[in-house]
Picture (cartoon, rainbow, N blue to C red):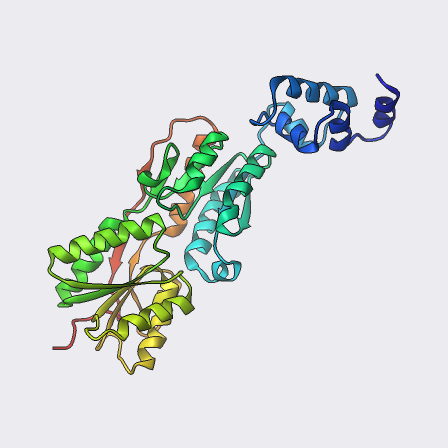
Length: 345
């Protein structure tokens, strides 16, 4: 043992001491201790030798070396932080996750970030040994996260259709069936022109809903119009105004989330339109917001808390190496309320 290593052992060793003795960076020490891709076998052995020589046993390293898991789940959401605080879906979804995590003495590591940073955040967490696995949300068509996170061996569950999930286990709601039910309901009321205010058009579920929307409308000989937004009240209001300004205006409009539907009630009032006498509105998710408005909003309702429970449970199975099959959760169901009615003759 060198004089320098003896001096380091005389005080509590740090990760920097281990890195210095092994001749590597502190991040390489973390990667090696958690057996993540990124360092060679020879380098890993050199690092472990340094750990043993210095007797370094911080809590995280000790748990790893003894074979005990670090119970943390990662979730990265690429939305503006202010918008996320107003979005009922994620509040309910996270509450479902937490109900499972807390019962297993686990933690949720949440990051709100820009879309371009998502892969880097997951990679940093996984290779740094900060998480056991991740939950991937808001999948896009040909989402770059799938290939990048598969390559580093990250255990993950995708919240989205299996066509978006690559090799990962996925859980999803049947958006196509829900859109079909919504359009059939409005058409049965007598609406022959139905509008839709969507979320970002590159989101996988937006594409699935739009394709189903156009397919069922063509089958029922219903005219359609679509405007895109970002799930916020402001952008949802602007998109809804654009539909109302069309010469041949829709008599019923479906919204991709509750927040935009609630904002639309104020826009309808600006135009002097009565809901549902002049215009029918149908929300998505059916949070408490839908029941607190006047009139109460009709909605495609699903148990988002239970969805979070199923996703967290599936991730534990994936992390533990148990066989887990991708599957759809309970489908949304139509809840008619005061915001939908037959159109005026």
